[in-house]
Length: 476
Image 1 (cartoon, one colour):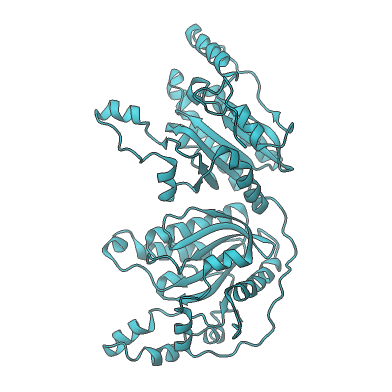
Image 2 (cartoon, helix red, strand yellow):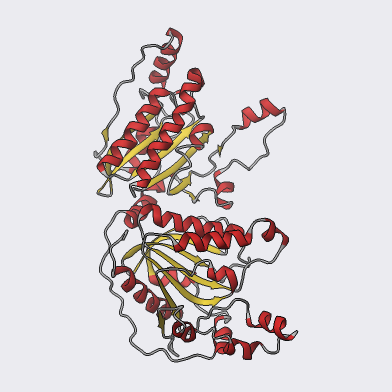
């Protein structure tokens, strides 16, 4: 399916109304917009507005209203670039602010799609300041636990990108879109040199974790349906069967060797076999995955350390993890963390990037969340990187998982000057899952059976997680 670019959209871009027709259920859109008050504007400016309306087929640079998205009531804010380059004047800003407040009052998720050069320069500072009012309204909306999803179209720059374009719980952009704070033409005029190429592109921002992905406008319904399926649709009853086998003690060194196996189930297998409706969010570091998903029917935010990443756990990874924690709190969703790390990054860049402070901030953030939290020792649990995702209300562990301040070889090197004592220390330090349970660090150990595959282990863990999440209401 493709968008048909009407004459009003200009440059082949979809118009605001065309995008609304693609995203919302047919015939469900109800406009909230009222005619703008043009009193007080100069005759020349009023004429510019009239010409813009004629060319664009819209009465302002933003259309707002409500409709249905796969049957779910939602509010929409959509830029019309063909109206004075989608610029935001006081009338457009008032329209946005009013729509956000109405959506909050009616308990509606907001879907926003931007395409704008920023503040309307014809109106100067008063229009510029309206970005503050828009941001305040959106923060009140988010404080009410209501979703705000953003789609950045080409181009999105200036005050729009620095306000309502950057406050989404989930933010994606269309392929090849110019997205940035300072437009390249302005940069060249100010500094007499071209802006570096391939920086202000949707793809580059996604690669650096600034936005969550790159999505064609025609594919938005699929993404929105998945996201709203997590954020809006109610939980379903757990279906997976919990394991009742007694957890047998595992030697600490055997646990270490088991979790280092190449075929050990990790976060990717957990998402594949134990989760449904997953929306992966872009992380600033590949060693941590963040997702909206359902674990055995229970919607949640999942943050998992990725054993398949070839990057050690650095400051950027922990910032991504903390973003997932804040997202869970903002949306009133449970948080599930999966711990599986060989250790944090040891480098000059990590130290200068504030690695220790990021570990501390993760521990502090997770320890003070008000939503239900479950952390799972899935495999390796080495050092502060593991501890950063551990302090949940409920802590689970796979039967062969472990937690230690250092890998056993590192502890042996410090205590004995060599690594030969690692197996002995792995037992002496009581790092195995059953030892952690006996010490009160872990609440429940999920046994690993001899015939376990990645699917059977991850679904067993999911069954246990879901039971702990379903024992308390969402947002409690």
